[in-house]
Image (cartoon, rainbow, N blue to C red; front, side, top):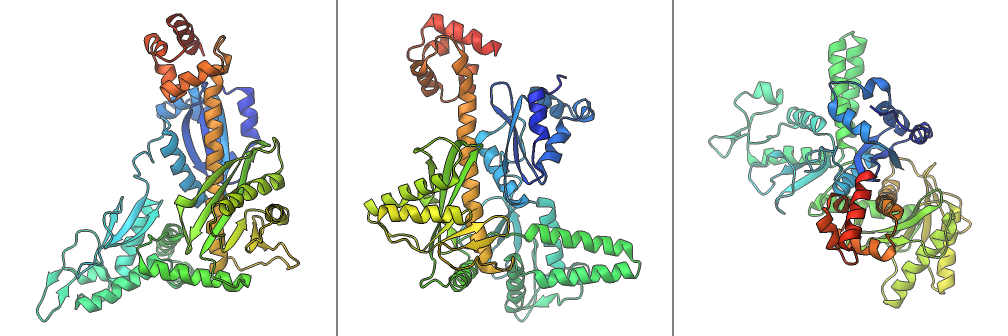
Amino acid sequence: MAAPSSDLKEKVRRLPHSPGVYMFKDQFGEIIYVGKAKDLKKRVSTYFQPSRRFRIDQPKIGAMIELIRDLEILEVHSDAEAILLEGKLIKEYKPRFNTDFTDDKRFLLVRVDIQNTIPKFQLVRTKRDNQSLYFGPFAYAKLLRTTLAEMQRKFGILLGDSKPGILKKGKFRLYDDARAEIYGQPNEMTPAEYQTRVEQACDFLRGKSREWLKEIKAEMKIAAAKLQFEKAAELRDIHQALKRTLTPTRKFKHDPRAREDRSENLKALRDALGLSVMPRRMECFDISHISGSFVVASMVHFRNGAPDKAQYRNFKIKSFVGNDDFRAMREVVERRYRRVQDEQKRLPDLIVIDGGIGQVQAAVEAFNGLNILPPPIIGLAKKEESIVFPDARKDLQLPRSDDALRLLQRLRDEAHRCANSFNAKLRSQRIRESVLDDMPGLGPTRRHNLLKHFKSLAKIKRATVEELSQAEGIGSKFAEELHEFLQRT
């Protein structure tokens, strides 16, 4: 196998020790693999260790490493964000060496058929109806199954295709062997009694699980103190599975209790910021670039505490070239709200800026330039998760568990994800197309016609001479030259 180039080695050496997504590319700039990492430098470095490259029991990895000529990364705030961004990029680019995310098999939902008299908790991959409750998606399938098994023991609920037995006097039996399944909880009950268990289990899936996690951790410590190490290890694994599976849990909008939770979060945010109105409509801006190139921004819109993706917007920076986050922020805020003003639409109840006081002041300057009285504007600084105000107020530091802060973090993280994704898309598109710049005689018009005809560089490379000649402005002779060039590169 060919050893990685010196440039690629240098890129790997300079990778940060932070969570994110990495993308491997071939000689044409095509993305051939997307992966996630808690520590980008440690994870990516493993691919280029000689012992990894030459293992005969991993032919797929060896074949992939042989093709790697370049890589790029996207840093994120957390492992959970990396998982979601990885899935989105894999679905978008469909790299040939990825298989996990191409058919959504990595994400699972928990479905509760509350429309039935005896609801059951089932694992599904798609939302099938609007009558059931859905929880998820969950990124860790194995851990989710462990969690459901523990919920069955804790709450005495039915899983999967279990069929309860019907008894007299309006009661039913959950299981044939109550002792094996629900550990001492009553096996015979009325539908109303069972409904209480269902509600408790649903509350747990909504994230109200701290007390149970504390109980398990306490039992684990007691077992370890009694030298019951096998039991302590089992409890530790259960605790980790529950914690990792259920943090965070996303709710679908038809869940009435989810709407109640969001309403409470909005109230908490209103009170924490001292707002005069409920922040039902919030917009958040984030800037993304790589050393001043491909500078872009994204704006996300939350309505009643949940994403409203129809209102999302992406921006390419037009007024300058280079690295100036403040200037970029002023430009996109000005463009966004000039259009809102021109279309006579409502301003949001709250604007959140991903950044510190400099970015916040830039947003305020944009409103001043438009001669518009701005709605409340705050910044959320990443390092300490401090809330920054444009006036004389001191930065606000909320507890990490505070519902108001968590809502702001979800908003900010979504803006960050969208900006990074848009940036990666533009860079990948430019890199893929750049190989055509080296073809003698292929000017901008012909290059545009080729991409318009074939839609992607990958299809151009796979095209025959006859197929290439069918593109506007590409004659048969030039098609032969182009085909030969693409086969050499």
